[in-house]
Image (cartoon, rainbow, N blue to C red; front, side, top):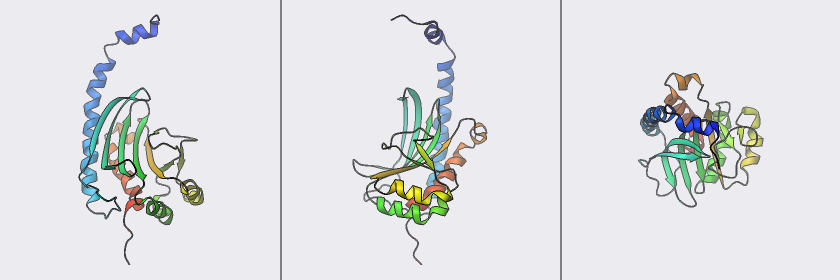
Length: 206
């Protein structure tokens, strides 16, 4: 198989990988900012968490092949077993977007679903989407992939959730968003977490 002219041009490019090496530490710094702000925020809330949950558990991950594109993410809070998942992922996916996602499976799933429907006005109209894929690890946005949670869609959201053994809520932020360009992405992460907190917080006793 011969290299095309485009292939040769890319093989000869000395700029891209040098730029990538400069950008990757900036992404790590962003994820560390998010981690710090989440630590402060979550101390003020009583979360409905799985048995064995460690409030200090977190994970920073860097890889090259999320559908052939590089990525970096933070999982915090973080709890994963084969059957139970309770995590918030802040993902920077090269070539696509930034995603802030709440991942829930097993454990208190019924309560999480009830919270989303019972507290729907607190979550709706805040740029949060219900992910429609039958995999928790799909990160695309758009028709067939996501359903934006708006005030008029409570019955539609309830129908999607009804028989699902897991669900994921996510906010998708394009790289051309002014907050990303102005170094305010960590503020969007905190806004996204706060928008989803009604789903995973304990019921308030009257």
